[in-house]
Length: 124
Image 1 (tube, one colour):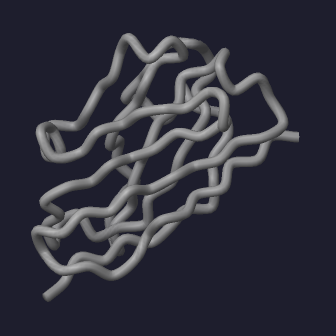
Image 2 (cartoon, one colour):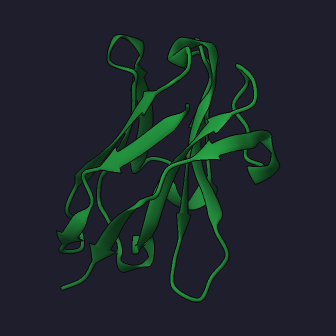
């Protein structure tokens, strides 16, 4: 059974950093691309970042490029999202997801397993 558990969220001030973690179990972690999505109150879920199974490819939404970095540690079955210079508009529930293949994707339809999410609130 596939499980994805996020951690690392919290309340931080603008300009701060956070590192989110997503620990996976129940499948061969290294064989799948992984992604991060977020959903702010009253808004649809949106793509944030994705990384391929072999870490050679990573995609980001434009609003986080240069501030967020996705990475993975296959030995720990964990994918990370390093978030720097956080802004109030980054406030959302962040969820990790497992892709259907080794390839990263911006499309939700290309993911078939989701975690419960961790809340990130950026406020002064």
